[in-house]
Amino acid sequence: MSTHEKDSAGFYRLAQLDQIPEDDMLQVPMEDEGVELEVALTIVDGEIYAFRDVCPHMAFPLSVGYINGTTLHCVGHAWTFDLKSGKAVVPPVKKGLKLYETRLDGDTVWVKVDPLF
Image (tube, rainbow, N blue to C red; front, side):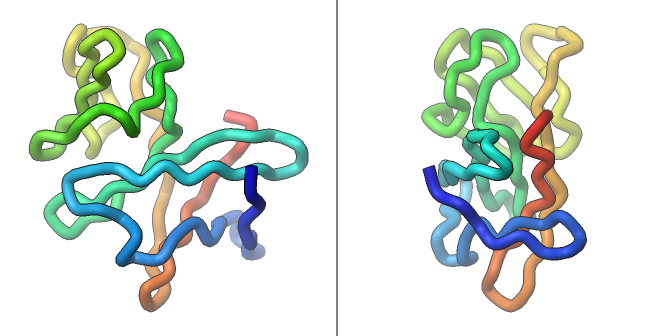
């Protein structure tokens, strides 16, 4: 598990822009204050999305799934999520993605991750 630089606003430096695949996902393991988690990063239509890399259904890693447009498909049990809102599309349930705010500084991708949630 690796640690990442954190700025005063709570953003972590997680990747360089060229590391993030278009319409696919990059898993970034991170740790802060003893809490370990994985964040998934993707670029869809030029927009960077970051989310906790765990399906809220059965804790399956979402980064092994696939993206179609702005829909993320979990291959564990076929749940799908809207990347823009984080809401589950199929099945229509209340559990959604934990989305994180992103910031681009040059080619460096910063993500505001609250590791406790």
